[in-house]
Length: 393
Length: 86
Image (cartoon, rainbow over all chains, first blue to last red; front, side, top):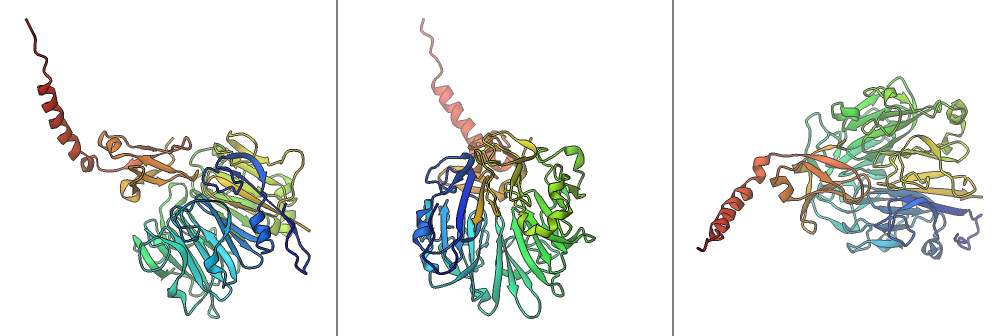
């Protein structure tokens, strides 16, 4: 793949693979087609920008936001709502730098169905894309094709942003403990700002209930919202799982368990406990995610297929290798084992399982690239497509 | 089986597609036209995959044009009455 820049520090030769839905250019292959098997990407613009390796990817409805170790942002895929931030409303087949952010060192990126968010090291938040539900937080319902600063947070230090289908969450850093804000569509309670449902908010509003709780991560997808506290407590709000009622303010979910990771889909959540166990909320809508007999209401269940040794307690020591990333479509799931192997299962119609076919799978299957198994360190999912990043020393 | 139930007010009108749309998990859009709704159709399909949603709406909200169409149709029918020739 690319050679990397001529910098002093040891260069990691990175590999980026993508597969699944690709007709908007979201796979970065330069071809407008779905891919049933993982494709190793050749991204000359990434190397040319001498921006270093990929720190993180954010995958949305059909676009990708890439953050480099140098604090630069590149975007590609669907751009018809301005979500790529290039100042126009067209798709882009290849990673292209977001020039308007070049004076900032970006530390965090996020992508929703049709909007994007960028956080700088100085704590500023920029958003662009569709704004018809107020999800950009600029006080209007307009679309923005270039990242615009969310002026509401000018006196705060933004740490993270999470994007759902039509809403956004923001996590602030502060000496008084972290605070969470929500804006965009609130119809399913996903903003968590009031026991009375708010239809929408185009300016950030404080999410209720976290005054005495230190939140470390926030996540959003579909009409769901979730966060983890510093002591591993999971809070969820928004659309209910498995047909249960919507939750309008954050609720401590499964309070007897401590979680290290949570990943949301449109209809389910995957949870990793401190003990290395994997649970799922919801996800029984189509019956393809697992043996339906094992899924009952909102009771958490050990994920079928995860009872084997590769997911038991030895895992938590290397829990940073386990990356939960249920697809936003939340109809298919991706897990990485401790050995860096990728397992997928669920709905396979777009080849998003990366198994070489369009069949559904009810149990986790190992994703193989031709002959060898590539040791993947991180996985990111968008709507019907997946990226896997392998960092090589 | 329907992937989800979506209220018509939560769908967005797409001028280019001339349809009401809603995000599909595959990345494309579930779509249903006004004509479909007038005809009492409640399934919005995705052109890229096999998923579909059930649209929740009040059929009366889409009935007006149908009644106008009926009158127009009748007028045309009358004008085209076959005339028998002995």
